[in-house]
Length: 153
Image (tube, rainbow, N blue to C red):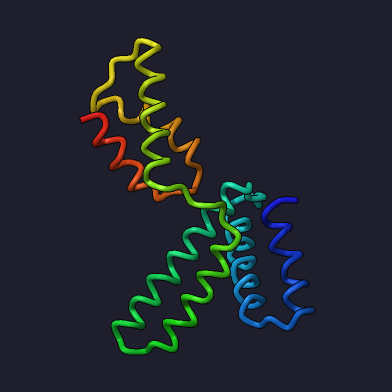
């Protein structure tokens, strides 16, 4: 079962259970997926990885909105946004720790060095490509880039 199919099945489950927050949140996410699939010249089906990326963006959007509400003194609205973010994050794969990501980066660098590749800051792309594939949406991309940069410096 794909992630999109899981979301669609959960709409029915949330509806039957009367969970309004989860129902509206999942419906909104499915709407966003539908919009993304139909937005190009030709309709496409999003892969699970693309859906995960979209879910991460949606959760981050809600967390940012919650932060803005807190700064504006509207805690009740912030709580609602955080609750939606938590519903979305339940569909994401388990996040990696910084130590796990650092270990992945170190192993990729060791593999590249073993194959005779000379590594420096110019070879950041060579390191980032396999690392990004292994991390696959379970850790912030900018933080991964910072870790790779520090290891290559």
